[in-house]
Image (cartoon, rainbow, N blue to C red; front, side):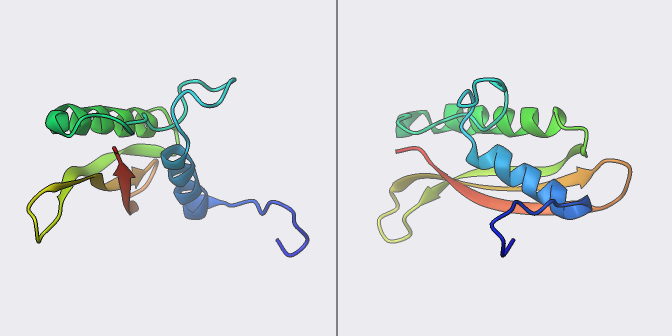
Length: 117
């Protein structure tokens, strides 16, 4: 807020905030919440892209399934980014997912990029 306080969020804003926090927090970085956050894939080898994709997919699914605000992941795509000019990978994964809120029909679309180099 303008006073420097934390503003509380409710409803869909709270759900969006929750997903964002899960994504930007590295798994294991919170001492009292070791299962909160997304797995760190920085430094993984580009030759194991399918392994990185699976690791991220399972981490995202785990975070959504462990939160009672969400019913389920509707869609999830984890794609390796390729430089269009060189055809070579750029060391990042583009992630897009749609999450259904619990107790309703509202679906939240979310897209972000995760670096792995």
